Length: 477
Image (cartoon, rainbow, N blue to C red):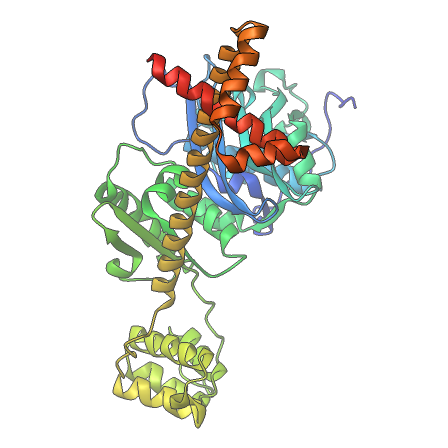
């Protein structure tokens, strides 16, 4: 398809709340967020392990990113530019790999200043994306096939830029066309609908690069459930892009400002430090995220505004009257109510007699009197940890069994080869005499099986000869 030298470009709306994000690009970072990188570094590597429903096993997903010698690896700023290109493509309905735009249009979309420095930064970013190659191993979700696949591709195949020097005096900036061409792998993912809604203006308003990365990943994950728990190091290294040189204390320090920004803007549910970061052992920490519940819109005649409307709703769903629920939320700490709700749900699932007669009444009494959990109560967090530990123990056991079987096969193959080599080294007469001697020394049961013939007889004959040969070989050592 040939594009004309110039064409009128419709001015893009300043607000682009109805944005889009490609799901694969949201899962792994495409740049490192470390402040310092080796000047000659040209490769980034990220990986994790997840349960694959199609294969019914744990798989390792890997993403390797290489930059060109001339322009290097992507930066956090380049990540914003790439997301802007997705929005430009959305404006054109994801209809063609080749997307026309003006540099001024893209700057306005990104919220950058209209100055020489911004134009230079934009061109450098597009140069980098043209030179970057992505290597996905078991890590690119193919929506058509509903499976994780391998893919290797450049992000952009081509870029044409219309510079200010190309403009004629009787035309404005918006009348000249630049264009970029997506690689076919990404564009096929667009057209397959492997996209999610994205509040692009929300992303632009975030100050921290870590907050932007957190938002894109968690906004994708919250579609499936509103609470997620991750291993701190794997999450920070492999999904946020923080330096692997950071220990747990440094990772928490690096993540806190981005988390706080998302809490302040109403995306994440605020949590105390000991709830956000949970220590499992000396070297292992977990990080927990809960999506903030939208606040209920209430009138002056209705219940008074409350930051805990989600707790009111949770209590009402369990049979408590609205008035009682509102009173409880106003009078008692949120964590106390949440704990009693969790214990209540646990008892209900076990059909415990404590709650069978009057479940809402028991729940309100538990909140009011702050009942202690039953001795055998297991919280969702603890159960998830136990399930994870059990799954890891099972995986390690399966790995050990596979290794044991492989070693056993290797020993058996080596044994068979030694026997074969020895027999082949003998002449015909020597081999016949060896087999005769072996059969003479065989136990009575094996001689009986050999005389009967058939498959059992053949197997018994081979076993007798093999054992005799191995004994001869050992005697030589």
